[in-house]
Every structure is written in C-alpha cells, then in structure tokens.
Length: 68
Image 1 (cartoon, rainbow, N blue to C red):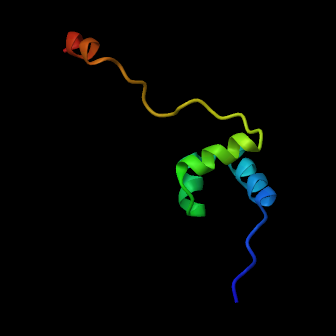
Image 2 (image 1 turned 180 degrees about the vertical axis):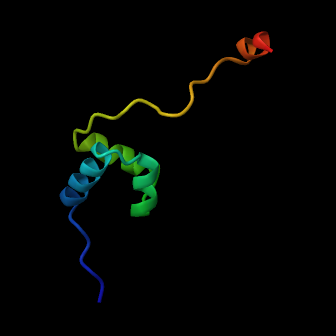
C-alpha cells in the first residue's frame, strides 16, 4: 500500500521551511525527485524570499588573462 501523497500546501510549507533552514534548491530537487525549476516555482508560490546565487564570483576572461 502506498502512502497518500502530501497535499500541495503541505509540500509548499515543507519546502519553504527546508529552504529557509539552509537547504539548496538543488538539494530539495534531489530529495523530492522534482526538477530544479518546479522547486524554484513552488518556493516563489509559497512566498519564500530566495537567496542570491552562491558559489564563486566569476570574472571575465579578459580580466583573468590580464592578471596572468
């Protein structure tokens, strides 16, 4: 017997709590089996304020070659 699926409101609430607790959109996508885009949309739908992009800041190739 399968467990009943969560309601959309429950899922939105859980995603928002996890994201605001520090989980990344990619991590939420992997753990739920949903796409990055669907998680992103659901977070926006739930009223979540999204964090800015993480990772290293990129510099232009011209600036990098000038430093070398």
